[in-house]
Image (cartoon, rainbow, N blue to C red):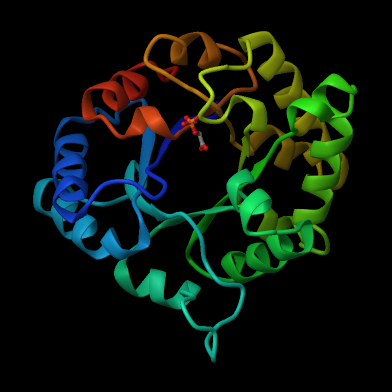
Length: 256
Ligand code: PGA
């Protein structure tokens, strides 16, 4: 049975004090007997957030801190970039890769996501690889083709022993930050396809164990329905992770 993972993606929000307050509230109140939790603050607050969380609970598999992005290069003349080793050094456990906002606004291609995934899989960090179609692509019946291309691109040349460490997130672009959520049935259909794709690209065991999160306007009132579906193994939460109370409700809605 796959344990659920609830990830909070704070994106480019909050100031340092708010980040510490939110992290402290979530870390002290989150119940993690039934699910794993990761919070992903802006990179400049990772250190403060780690310290705040360590003050109230042990950081471990069930509660950890993630980054929203990382460089594919180990070091060098790359102004503004942050390396995998720097994140490891801080005590970060997860990193989100291939988020649609980075694909859309920062021109991250499947090849870039692949390079970052290779860098991350050679480290102690756990990647959350995001895929998802735009509204036009869905309306043109291309959803499966799009996620197939994104999965094949992201995992190209990566062997099963490394790929098995990755988490996936299905985030339909039309549902992110729009208040429009995929119905549990729509999401389950794509999650089922994604699991099949991982089986084709790798093997049945990897397909059975990979966690596939759903993201896109997950809220306290739709989280339980989404996560009741057999192939939905948790949630990647944007807007609703910025409020402790709402995020805690989503954590509580994870399937035991
Ligand atoms: P949202 O964002 O929950 O605000 O729609 C989800 C995401 O982008 O990860």
